Length: 257
Image 1 (cartoon, rainbow, N blue to C red):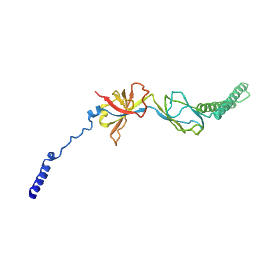
Image 2 (cartoon, rainbow, N blue to C red):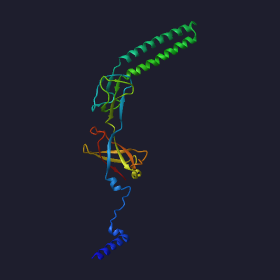
Image 3 (tube, one colour):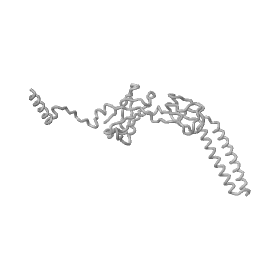
């Protein structure tokens, strides 16, 4: 009985060596660009085409915030107000010095016509007047930065600073995002690069709102990620949709020829 078992095992080993396919099923190798899977849809992310952090352009205290985290605003709205008293006073001083320099220049020009002053004195007066003009422009710019205006229509992501906080030039104050210009971001296997171009249309089914939207590819990534072997594709939706928010996601299907 033991001899029969031994002979049986030896036969199995011999059979497996000569015909491995009889004992082990082999799955077919997956093609690198499975078009059927691609047409079934890939994951896409809703993103904003503009997201930025607004920073203080002057060193001053924040007088008031007109928006808070999550608030909506329109382009041109006043978002933050800074204390502007010292900048306004410096502007008035610069304007007064400019007026003085202008009058001095006018007097020197009249005296020059009477040969009472030299050309050098007129040139010096003109130079001082030009300097006061430049200084006035600087002060006007600083005063204009006492108010932070919305560069586009959107929403506040985060209020970084606090009311009455003293901020220095370049310090972050508000993080905002454009909610009108929405795009779709997709990462595709690099094998599909040749199948997509900037005329390719697509549809995305956004899960959070359970709706589908149409769009067109607007940009292909400039390089392939070496680790994941994927390339970034971006597309723009055909219409504006206020219900869509950056961070939503869904399944994207491309309309291929």
